[in-house]
Length: 113
Image (tube, rainbow, N blue to C red; front, side, top):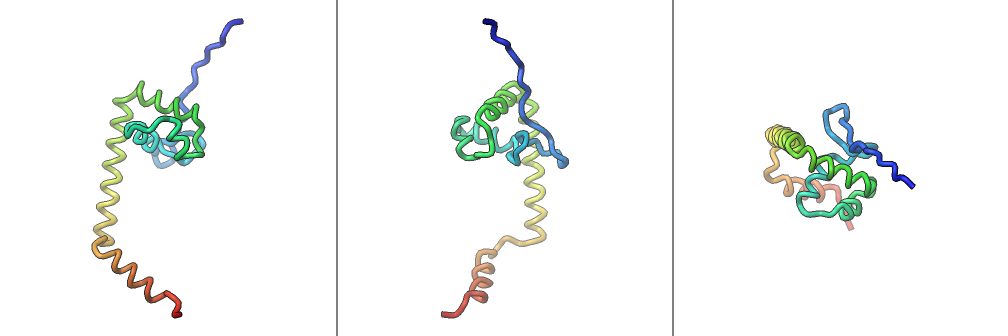
C-alpha cells in the first residue's frame, strides 16, 4: 500500500478588513500565534477556542513557523493599529474615572428595596 501524501494549505483567510482569521471562524491569526508564543499547546488552544479544529491549529502554527518573518511583520502592524485605535478612543472618551462613573450610573438604576 502506498501512502498518498497531500500538501494541505494553511486554513487562514483574510477578511474584508484585512484581518487574517482561521478559516470559517472568527478567531484571528494573532490569537493563535500569541497563545502559541505564550507557551500554549495546540490542545490548550483548542480548549480555549472550541470553534477551532485541532488539525487546523497545527497547520496555522506550522504556517507561522515557516513564515515567521512575514507573520511577525503582520503582527507588529496589527499591534500598531490596535494602539492607534485605543489612543483615538481614549482621546474621545477619557478612561480616567470610568469605573466611578459606571458605579454612580448603576446606583441610579438599581431598584429600591
